[in-house]
Image (cartoon, rainbow, N blue to C red; front, side, top):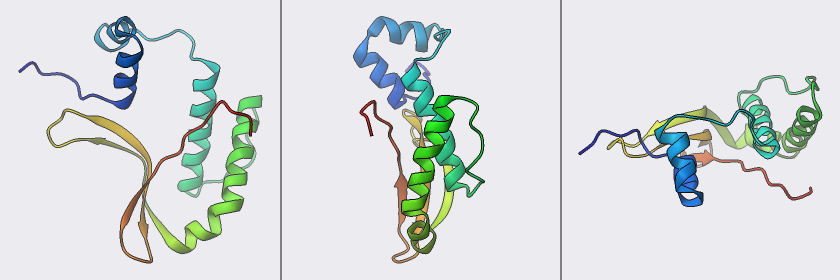
Length: 133
């Protein structure tokens, strides 16, 4: 069997969307010169959520409109969930990369937390949307 890199969700989605794009990006190794606005904003929100889960300071970098919008969303998220999160969960890892034992699949999860109520581990995943909030 040919030795291949593990399959990620992004690679699978690209394959399903366009086989040629998959070849260019994942086989030939080329990437776009400029990321889409939606992808940039999603990355910005994930950066702020990473700061939230790591308990880093959240509040004062507003270098762009997307940064300000993302920080406002995460500050609202923190206002809604932070007390409950601190009382119910212990953060185990943030932006945790994984590869399955057989090496076929890989990815990254936003956070892994331990429930202080029942001792179970939970995976935290966040997704952004293009819909107006």
